[in-house]
Image (cartoon, rainbow, N blue to C red; front, side, top):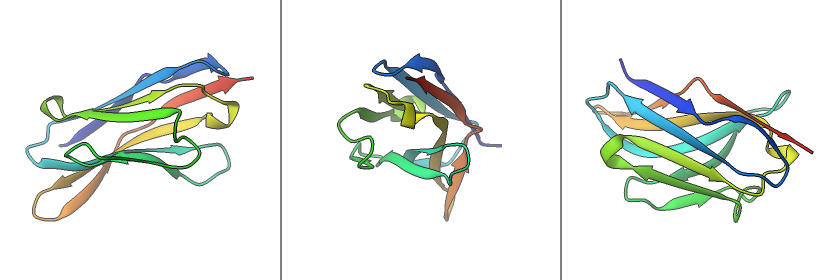
Length: 118
């Protein structure tokens, strides 16, 4: 059973930084694209950033120039370095991994809470 586990969330003040991590375990399948999404209270889940297996990143406009996504394929790991955090970044952050087992399937973590106080 594939497991996707996020960590690194917490409570910080505006302007501070956090680094989220995500580990995909128990997978015998190839991991393709990986990404981060977030969901604020009362809002729909939104895409934050993603990265291809070869390391090409993409960012939403709201986090571009503040967040950096990276991955370590040897460790089946995904990271999100978040700098200059703003109160509007407050949300539950979810890791997404696309695994190929003949078809491309989405796997999600349980989420990690990020709270930014003003």
